[in-house]
Amino acid sequence: MSHNSSTYGGGSSTGIGQAKALDIFSHALPRYMYALTCYMASTTSFHGARIGTLNAARDLDGASGTECRARYRTWAVVNVTAGNG
Image (cartoon, rainbow, N blue to C red; front, side, top):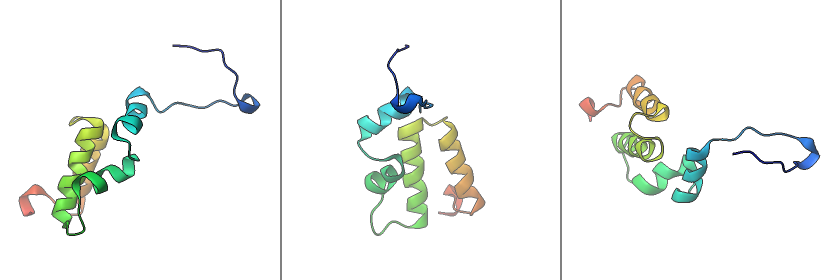
């Protein structure tokens, strides 16, 4: 899809892509707040935070998405895994 509209000052911008743009509207939360507001409470443990952030990553990016895989690796390097929960 192309367009011919002008931009302020002739500037340009790289888009974030349709999927991430839709997330903004369909979830109505900033991406960084999604896990906190949908999967965590004030009593959430580190293991609960792991589960919450992984669930949020799956919701927002799909189970095989790059961000989801990165979150698994991030929790593993700080030794918060399913095996030691």
